[in-house]
Image 1 (tube, helix red, strand yellow):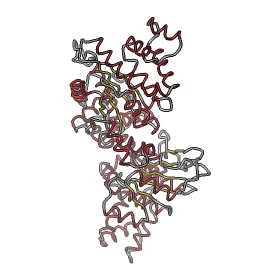
Image 2 (tube, one colour):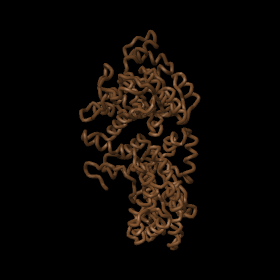
Image 3 (cartoon, rainbow, N blue to C red):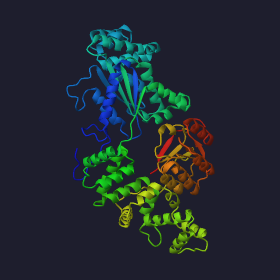
Image 4 (cartoon, rainbow, N blue to C red):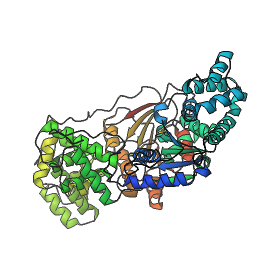
Length: 577
């Protein structure tokens, strides 16, 4: 759909159009051929693995369409005997998922087969129901409901359900010999968003009740999230969780990162759909891709935010708007300073210029170039009799967030793209009344119970489930957010948990905790990192921080610092703005 004059918001839905900038259809075709060529090996499970926003649902939808012979180019083709089911585990979370998934699968089987076997195996009760089955007037949905009700009420029948499913598939194949047996492909999407209870119920349905010839399951998930979520449910050992998942999945396909050409094509198409071809040229799209890391969902979200910002402030240079959005979303501490308008005494309108000056002074100090540092301090009208004392005095006059920001390589690379005119435009826009700024005060937190600050750009619900029930969890997706909270808060956290591997290379989290410590936090710190260098361990030790790599180790560290006092009122989560 073409965007109108004012632009069109991009929907966060699977991309099934004829245009295919990420070449997903080719991957769907390969998976289709693999599944159809392996139908005699069913039952088996295929996992479509990828992080948030990488296109799992799009690939699964395209694969389903191909299995149904409904994709472009499949005119006249039939995949005989193939039936598909789409089951969104996240939407069903909190309900009887086991029941819902089994019912969805059984409803694909020939009703006459189910009626015959249900009567033969006594899976329904009551003369009226039996008569309805014999007459064939009981509709398939009602029949499956009745079967499940009988199974739920009688454990002996529950134990026979898998045999019932197997026999149904065999009888179905005998009645219809036009093809190589029936194949029921069950797509289970968004499993990584679900609770451990839901995930285990899905696995139980697959391996206990529907583990029969003719069934193929296609699961969309982030493997790490699923395994970490089910750790408590399978005994608290992450190796056991990994092994548990390995028993479920026979074929794992990890969605690769799109190539630069593919990402460029996707960005161009998104701009076209949004009606922004005239606004966002090649230079702007390149900046947009760099900002989002090439994540398809992030690209759409960024374009939507750009549309809203453009609508609110009217005409403005596209590059300036993009840079402003980057500062808003990824460099909160600096953006807050820009909105306040407080800068150095000689240039109170340009915080970015003040920060650039600070970086210059800081670099001269860190490389031990006293001559250059002395010249800079003279320009700042500070004493140079003792350059160390002069630098300390200079740093005390700067905003508290500057020292940490000076080590943010992504921020420094971004600011290198900004000329003086653009810089002033950014500061002016940030102070504009049309730009809504986040409140500077700390969010409300619970009065009682432990307070945990979790710093991670990709927080995982399964890891958060390791916390005690009475915790108030503050989630910061950037070092800037965490630092702003620590500055503003009236109550210090009881525990800080942080990733070590972001946002600036393998030690970005370490710099963030150093800034949090400098802001006055003296409590326990736990780094949760899958990859830890010796340098990282040494630096963490100097911060008096504990380093763990596995969920079971994280759970032990949490128990060490936050003793559990029994069930609480329920975990409260606050996402910092």
